[in-house]
Length: 417
Image (cartoon, rainbow, N blue to C red; front, side, top):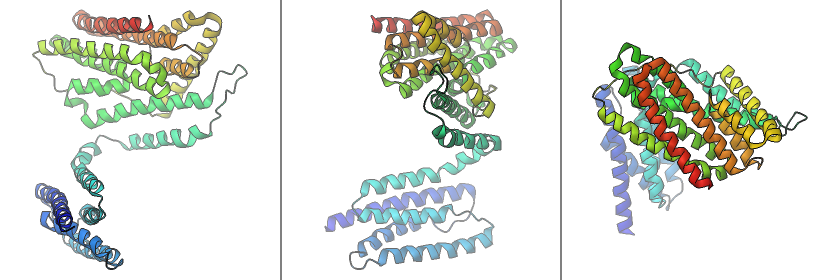
């Protein structure tokens, strides 16, 4: 018992000390004034543990000490705010959280206490990152994020879950669910690019930009070769990374909609991704020029008109597949996949996966259709790159797609034998 008590005291002091040290370092670099540092927070955590320990004698000790701490911190904050004109309350709330971390230790919940301390440190360290992003995330972006929550948690639940047309094709709930999924994935990539900034490096831009639109990356970067032919090799790597991210995006979409279909899709698309990355790595090793800035234009994917456009496209493709499959069989669906893939691979992927999940399409046929759409989309991007970027850039990109698409087709063939 005494050893446990002493051990918990040491842990409480260490956790409080680390949190206080973070505040002390932050204050030093910001040249600001705060009420406490490493020693103060260590004592606060220790008091939290001792207060919890004393509840074995009287249950009023812990709430009384918490109340006293809050009053003390309020008094300190009011004094500091008058002197420094700084009304931030982060340190004060961190002190209360540190007190509770110490209290957690007494209740033999060391794992939760340590996790809580790590989470506090993470949140305290976000300040500099938030300041970096403040100038990049616009008010419009925030408004559109709210629109996404509205689309997901308000509009989606009230939509009819049964087909509304006499042919039993158009299901508003299913269509809007796909809109939410596509918009959510695209918005994740859009925000990621906002965080890293397009000037942090083309490889990072290619990866996160591929979550938004690999076609947009191909269009934007291909045009840059005109100004500087020497960039062809490095730009080819960045465009390839974006296209490989598109393959990964297909895996995510299928995994969400139909896990059974994922068994057929996962390995072909992983093969395409890995072989493509090996090819890109070889190109990257050959490139001596390192580009540190690039302008790639991305639209926020949560704009209402974009969401409606995605919904219409998905509805049309889903309806077309149902009709074509009924009258022309798998061959008709494959043709639709190739045509749809020329401009967008998300809608056809989700449509096929959705039908597969309902048992309306065999897993083998569904996987072939999705691969055909991806091949069609890849070839479309390749011709865009050749047309805008010229033969040199086109040669590198053609090599990339030849390697990745051949690997995809080979693995799929072996799976469906």
